Amino acid sequence: MTAGIENTVLIVAATAVWYSAAIAVAAVTAVTARTADRRRDAREVLKVLVRRNSR
Image (tube, rainbow, N blue to C red; front, side, top):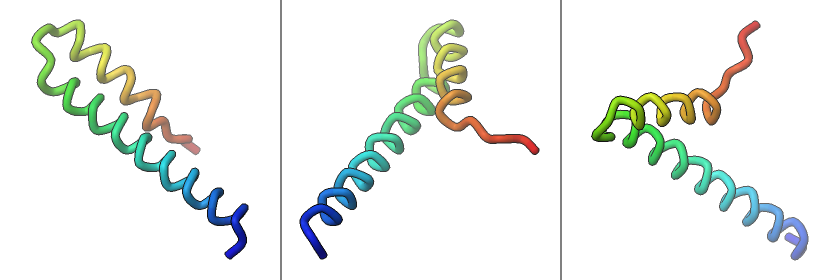
């Protein structure tokens, strides 16, 4: 592989890891937050992160 392709693959992999971590943190917060407001906010964040196109 060329250096450019290797760097691109690393960037894509790192982005996927960070995205997965963000979803995991939001999901845990949505379940375990102490206040209802925080749980509701975490669910809204999850809706944005895991938005699906309905067709």
